[in-house]
Every structure is written in structure tokens, then in C-alpha cells.
Length: 102
Image 1 (cartoon, rainbow, N blue to C red):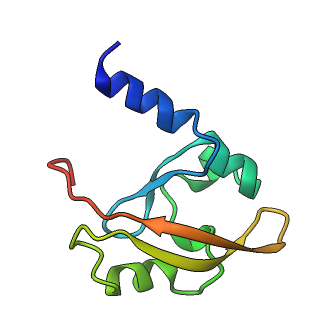
Image 2 (image 1 turned 120 degrees about the vertical axis):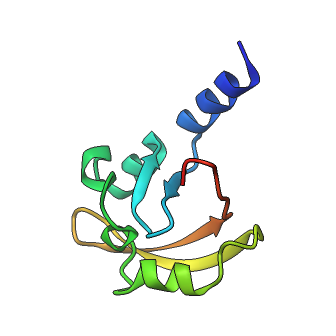
């Protein structure tokens, strides 16, 4: 197995929620732990704004305004809006990266 294959398997099977957003704040990847924790399916999240998950009305705008292109990991205390319309406090660690595909 290559390092990339192992990394993909580790993220996919991680017990902690992992998601990737494009520069506009749109979900491009979610793992099973995120869908289990929030009740949102992969299909409900992919292609939709992070605002789907975070109760902050302008979450994607907030993330962009934080200057998250400097590569510094930041911790955010957030309120997640779960599929069953309940709100849950959570901590999200955001590590920005820019790939050649973005």
C-alpha cells in the first residue's frame, strides 16, 4: 500500500469528523464520522455550503474572512446544526491548504 492509500484510508475511517471545503466554503469531502455525528448524509453535504452544518448564518463568509490561506491551523468553537434540527456545540480545527486542483 502506498502512503497516499494509507492516508486516504486513515481519513475515511477516522473516528473524528473530517471534511474538506473548497475556497468558497462548499463541501468537497466528508468522512463517515461527520455524517454519523451530525445525521447529515454525504449526499446532503457534498456540493453544499458549510452553512448547511454550522448554525452561524454566514459561516462560509466567516471562514473566508479569517484569512485561512496562510496555512495556520485554527481552533473554532462552533454550533453545529444537526439534521434533526438540534444544535450542538463542537470544536472544529481548520487547517487551510491550497492544492493545484483548486
